[in-house]
Length: 186
Image 1 (cartoon, rainbow, N blue to C red):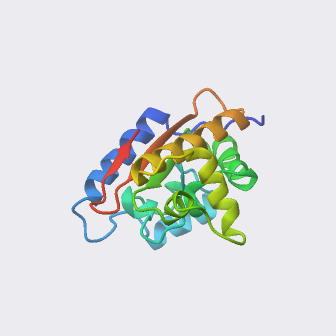
Image 2 (cartoon, rainbow, N blue to C red; image 1 turned 90 degrees about the horizontal axis):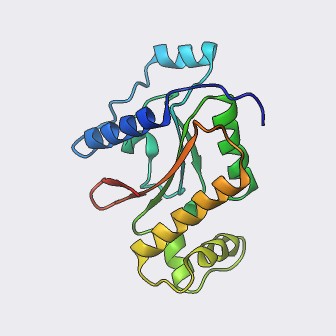
Protein backbone atom coordinates (compact mmCIF):
# COMPACT_ATOMS: atom_id res chain seq x y z
CA UNK A 1 0.00 0.00 0.00
CA UNK A 2 1.29 3.44 -0.86
CA UNK A 3 1.31 6.29 1.61
CA UNK A 4 -2.23 7.40 2.30
CA UNK A 5 -3.06 11.06 1.76
CA UNK A 6 -5.27 12.19 4.66
CA UNK A 7 -8.52 13.90 3.76
CA UNK A 8 -11.81 14.66 5.46
CA UNK A 9 -12.65 11.99 8.09
CA UNK A 10 -15.19 9.42 6.89
CA UNK A 11 -17.83 10.45 9.47
CA UNK A 12 -17.66 14.10 8.35
CA UNK A 13 -17.80 13.06 4.70
CA UNK A 14 -20.90 10.94 5.35
CA UNK A 15 -22.59 13.83 7.18
CA UNK A 16 -21.77 16.11 4.24
CA UNK A 17 -23.35 13.64 1.79
CA UNK A 18 -26.48 13.36 3.93
CA UNK A 19 -26.78 17.17 4.16
CA UNK A 20 -26.28 17.44 0.41
CA UNK A 21 -29.04 14.91 -0.24
CA UNK A 22 -31.39 16.88 2.04
CA UNK A 23 -30.75 20.01 -0.08
CA UNK A 24 -31.32 18.00 -3.27
CA UNK A 25 -34.74 16.71 -2.26
CA UNK A 26 -36.35 20.11 -2.87
CA UNK A 27 -33.86 21.65 -5.31
CA UNK A 28 -34.44 22.49 -8.94
CA UNK A 29 -30.75 23.10 -9.64
CA UNK A 30 -27.47 21.81 -8.20
CA UNK A 31 -26.04 24.31 -5.71
CA UNK A 32 -22.56 22.72 -5.96
CA UNK A 33 -19.67 24.99 -6.94
CA UNK A 34 -18.98 24.67 -10.68
CA UNK A 35 -17.54 28.18 -11.02
CA UNK A 36 -14.59 29.21 -13.17
CA UNK A 37 -12.69 29.82 -9.91
CA UNK A 38 -13.12 26.21 -8.70
CA UNK A 39 -12.19 24.88 -12.14
CA UNK A 40 -9.01 26.96 -12.06
CA UNK A 41 -8.24 26.00 -8.46
CA UNK A 42 -8.61 22.25 -9.06
CA UNK A 43 -6.59 22.51 -12.26
CA UNK A 44 -3.73 24.27 -10.53
CA UNK A 45 -3.87 22.55 -7.13
CA UNK A 46 -5.35 19.13 -7.87
CA UNK A 47 -8.41 17.33 -6.63
CA UNK A 48 -9.14 16.27 -3.07
CA UNK A 49 -12.60 14.70 -3.16
CA UNK A 50 -14.09 14.05 0.25
CA UNK A 51 -15.83 10.86 -0.91
CA UNK A 52 -15.75 8.15 -3.56
CA UNK A 53 -19.13 7.22 -5.00
CA UNK A 54 -19.27 3.99 -6.98
CA UNK A 55 -22.63 3.92 -8.67
CA UNK A 56 -24.62 2.78 -11.68
CA UNK A 57 -24.28 4.39 -15.11
CA UNK A 58 -28.06 5.00 -15.16
CA UNK A 59 -28.68 8.52 -16.48
CA UNK A 60 -31.12 9.20 -13.63
CA UNK A 61 -28.41 8.64 -10.99
CA UNK A 62 -26.16 11.71 -10.88
CA UNK A 63 -24.09 11.70 -7.66
CA UNK A 64 -22.97 15.33 -7.90
CA UNK A 65 -26.60 16.42 -8.06
CA UNK A 66 -27.92 13.86 -5.57
CA UNK A 67 -25.41 15.07 -2.97
CA UNK A 68 -25.43 18.77 -3.99
CA UNK A 69 -21.71 18.57 -4.77
CA UNK A 70 -19.55 20.64 -7.05
CA UNK A 71 -16.32 20.17 -8.96
CA UNK A 72 -13.63 18.31 -7.02
CA UNK A 73 -15.89 17.12 -4.19
CA UNK A 74 -16.74 13.57 -5.31
CA UNK A 75 -14.65 10.94 -7.06
CA UNK A 76 -17.39 9.25 -9.06
CA UNK A 77 -17.05 5.79 -10.59
CA UNK A 78 -19.94 4.74 -12.79
CA UNK A 79 -20.57 1.30 -14.22
CA UNK A 80 -23.86 -0.38 -15.12
CA UNK A 81 -25.22 -2.21 -12.09
CA UNK A 82 -22.56 -0.67 -9.80
CA UNK A 83 -20.60 -3.91 -10.08
CA UNK A 84 -16.97 -4.15 -8.99
CA UNK A 85 -14.14 -5.64 -11.00
CA UNK A 86 -10.46 -4.70 -11.37
CA UNK A 87 -10.96 -1.29 -13.02
CA UNK A 88 -13.36 -0.15 -10.30
CA UNK A 89 -11.08 -1.52 -7.57
CA UNK A 90 -8.15 0.39 -9.06
CA UNK A 91 -10.20 3.57 -9.15
CA UNK A 92 -11.28 3.22 -5.51
CA UNK A 93 -7.71 2.45 -4.48
CA UNK A 94 -6.42 5.53 -6.32
CA UNK A 95 -8.96 7.87 -4.71
CA UNK A 96 -8.36 6.49 -1.22
CA UNK A 97 -4.57 6.27 -1.36
CA UNK A 98 -3.62 9.20 -3.56
CA UNK A 99 -6.44 11.71 -3.20
CA UNK A 100 -7.26 11.30 0.48
CA UNK A 101 -10.86 10.13 0.17
CA UNK A 102 -11.77 8.43 3.44
CA UNK A 103 -15.32 7.47 2.53
CA UNK A 104 -16.35 5.04 -0.21
CA UNK A 105 -20.07 4.81 -0.95
CA UNK A 106 -21.46 2.04 -3.12
CA UNK A 107 -24.69 3.61 -4.37
CA UNK A 108 -27.30 1.32 -5.86
CA UNK A 109 -30.74 2.52 -6.89
CA UNK A 110 -34.35 1.53 -7.27
CA UNK A 111 -35.65 0.50 -10.68
CA UNK A 112 -32.17 -0.57 -11.82
CA UNK A 113 -32.26 -2.03 -15.33
CA UNK A 114 -29.19 -4.20 -14.75
CA UNK A 115 -30.66 -5.69 -11.56
CA UNK A 116 -33.98 -6.20 -13.36
CA UNK A 117 -32.21 -7.99 -16.20
CA UNK A 118 -30.42 -10.26 -13.71
CA UNK A 119 -33.73 -11.06 -12.00
CA UNK A 120 -35.33 -11.74 -15.38
CA UNK A 121 -32.68 -14.19 -16.51
CA UNK A 122 -29.78 -12.12 -17.76
CA UNK A 123 -28.74 -10.71 -21.08
CA UNK A 124 -26.50 -11.41 -24.04
CA UNK A 125 -23.18 -10.11 -25.26
CA UNK A 126 -20.98 -8.05 -22.97
CA UNK A 127 -24.04 -7.05 -20.93
CA UNK A 128 -24.15 -10.64 -19.69
CA UNK A 129 -20.89 -10.13 -17.77
CA UNK A 130 -22.73 -7.50 -15.72
CA UNK A 131 -25.93 -9.48 -15.21
CA UNK A 132 -23.96 -12.63 -14.31
CA UNK A 133 -22.11 -10.68 -11.61
CA UNK A 134 -25.39 -9.32 -10.24
CA UNK A 135 -27.09 -12.73 -10.43
CA UNK A 136 -24.27 -14.22 -8.36
CA UNK A 137 -24.85 -11.49 -5.76
CA UNK A 138 -28.64 -11.73 -5.58
CA UNK A 139 -29.21 -15.46 -5.97
CA UNK A 140 -32.90 -16.20 -6.41
CA UNK A 141 -34.13 -12.86 -5.02
CA UNK A 142 -37.02 -11.53 -7.15
CA UNK A 143 -37.80 -8.29 -5.31
CA UNK A 144 -36.02 -5.44 -7.12
CA UNK A 145 -35.32 -3.37 -4.01
CA UNK A 146 -33.97 -6.33 -2.02
CA UNK A 147 -31.90 -7.44 -5.01
CA UNK A 148 -30.41 -3.95 -5.35
CA UNK A 149 -29.44 -4.05 -1.66
CA UNK A 150 -27.81 -7.47 -2.06
CA UNK A 151 -25.94 -6.20 -5.11
CA UNK A 152 -24.62 -3.20 -3.16
CA UNK A 153 -23.52 -5.50 -0.31
CA UNK A 154 -21.68 -7.70 -2.80
CA UNK A 155 -19.77 -4.73 -4.20
CA UNK A 156 -18.89 -3.56 -0.68
CA UNK A 157 -17.51 -7.00 0.17
CA UNK A 158 -15.43 -7.05 -3.02
CA UNK A 159 -13.91 -3.69 -2.15
CA UNK A 160 -13.22 -4.67 1.45
CA UNK A 161 -11.76 -8.08 0.61
CA UNK A 162 -9.57 -6.94 -2.29
CA UNK A 163 -8.19 -3.60 -1.12
CA UNK A 164 -5.94 -2.97 1.84
CA UNK A 165 -6.87 0.59 2.70
CA UNK A 166 -5.94 2.77 5.64
CA UNK A 167 -8.03 2.29 8.80
CA UNK A 168 -9.45 5.79 8.27
CA UNK A 169 -11.22 4.67 5.07
CA UNK A 170 -14.81 3.51 5.54
CA UNK A 171 -16.92 1.69 2.95
CA UNK A 172 -20.71 2.04 3.18
CA UNK A 173 -23.69 1.18 1.05
CA UNK A 174 -26.69 3.23 0.03
CA UNK A 175 -29.75 3.04 -2.19
CA UNK A 176 -30.94 6.03 -4.22
CA UNK A 177 -34.71 6.11 -4.62
CA UNK A 178 -35.20 7.49 -8.12
CA UNK A 179 -38.90 8.10 -7.48
CA UNK A 180 -38.31 10.78 -4.83
CA UNK A 181 -34.55 11.53 -4.74
CA UNK A 182 -33.96 10.16 -1.26
CA UNK A 183 -30.72 8.33 -0.43
CA UNK A 184 -31.07 5.57 2.14
CA UNK A 185 -27.77 4.67 3.75
CA UNK A 186 -27.61 1.00 4.66
